[in-house]
Length: 113
Length: 118
Image (cartoon, rainbow over all chains, first blue to last red; front, side, top):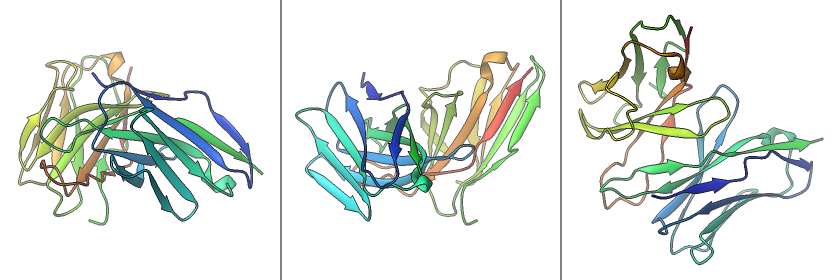
């Protein structure tokens, strides 16, 4: 079955720098991959979706890449701000006849002022 | 409503009791998902509804767990004879998509129900 790996250790980064989070998967390449943000005590919030035929997607300060050869997606936040501190989850479409996704365990990002 | 609503937000129960968790999805969303999230862990898929039917119940951990959805809207997750290992946050999500062939499946989550089994 598909295994999704996100760095379980928290990522601490200085304000203004670019944060890069990694999502690796082990088996087949999904039709699409999503990134969500989760704040403490809240449900995840959708950020970006990237399809398998797209190499890169951008939204404001966010950028997602998708490399089906490396079986990896990178999530970048440029000019990071303390308000970006949260846990970021990747989610992969896992087929099964409907649009089911499987979530990774998430990486906690802490932006230090 | 404006977003996915879950109730109660917190539930403390004694081991062996039954609990019911409710999810009110975004109006018009045909797909509904239940997940479980233990402290510091990722989201564990439990069950998926398309309309009132549940084509995928593969994530339900035991026969103590059941869920239903009525009127294509509100869903209830029931846990019978609760155990301490059931303690977690139970999250509900809804989406417009849910059928094969559609490219997007953006899930909108509620704030969750924090279940504590003593």
